[in-house]
Amino acid sequence: MVNRNKARPERRNSQYEKRLATILKAASKIIARDGYAGASVRDVAAAARINLSGIYYYFSGKDELLFALQRHTFATLVETLKKRCEQCATPEERLRAVIDNHFEFFITNMNDLKVCVHEIESLSGKYYDEVLTIRQEYYRLVRDIVAQCIGGAKKRADLAALFLFGSLNWVYMWYDPQKNADIRKLSGHLAEVFLNGINKM
Amino acid sequence: MVNRNKARPERRNSQYEKRLATILKAASKIIARDGYAGASVRDVAAAARINLSGIYYYFSGKDELLFALQRHTFATLVETLKKRCEQCATPEERLRAVIDNHFEFFITNMNDLKVCVHEIESLSGKYYDEVLTIRQEYYRLVRDIVAQCIGGAKKRADLAALFLFGSLNWVYMWYDPQKNADIRKLSGHLAEVFLNGINKM
DNA sequence: CGTTTAATCGAACGTTCGTTCTAATTATAC
DNA sequence: GTATAATTAGAACGAACGTTCGATTAAACG
Image (cartoon, rainbow over all chains, first blue to last red; front, side, top):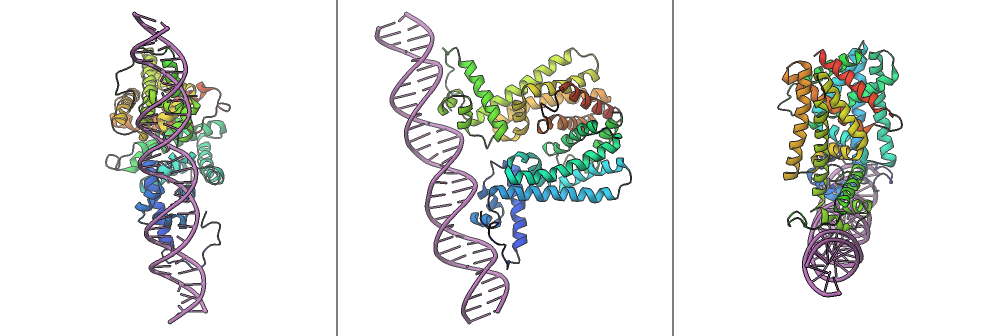
């Protein structure tokens, strides 16, 4: 508990934001590779080319590091989805936007999204709750779109949305940049399968 | 490295197998809760009501513990699936058997399956390779059934199978025994969505 | 019974971990 | 240019980890 309990620094190094972003990127890389519990703060520091104790100047502890990572990633994911949905006229278009958005976000932020999905249960208490709030917002957003596609049935939309999340969140386990070069085809195929599937529900 | 490098004991306590099973159950419970890296052998021992060093009488190390757990679980999963498929006449019935089998196995072995899915990358080397072999057998089994349902198109069956695995493997993140009491309904709904989806591919 | 061996136990080893403390260094403000 | 705050660096702490070892108990067999 170093930084957050003190008043925020008044005069900041001009490189503060950059350094913080560097640490977050390094953290997502190491945690994606070794898992949260398996990743050491020392490895994160080394990957960020900073001294071990330097990490504790930017973050109060290992858990806050993961928290900042997940919060930022999920918030960005929700934000980009909302923007995409604004340009969609029909529920089907919005559902395609959901899938497109998730896939596209994934290939440009693979490590971050993997850490968000795979380390959901690694936080606890206040940190967990705050991330949960954003996750729920994301979930409800998608579930409501699914419900509109189906035509109301809330219970079935719930289930269908969970199936969809499964397909989306599993991607990091099999995606190969060389083999699956065209991400648009991937998201297009999932959209087909899912849309055809739920329309018959 | 205690046990596996020595010749197998000739005379065994009659409770040997039971004790081993107890340890495996305890391990799956602890690892499902804390993750492989986060789980301590001490906690596993305590949950199995055995002394810490007693674990090392049955397993050469923490990694072999996870290995034995994953190998046994995946092997059982493949075995039960094969038996179910033998009683199916059509590809569609076999696909329903895949989904039914996975769901049913899940609710009776939640911890084990979670450890299999969530800790896939926690092993390495020889252990990882051997589990990978079984996983691939399971995957190919399902993929071929999907291909038969679609009607040949190998490339699309690959993708569709991965989407299906995503939905199946994500279940442990949201399943609530109290809320989703009827597992048959769950698997039935997923089968509907998926079958309708891929038939239009 | 005594002997042999399987099974269990308690204690300890060496390492790595997250975190903290203090000192030194660098950047900013007056 | 000097005072002050922000930032980095190095060393160290205590705790927890996986693993090992030697001794001890329990069971099998003559």
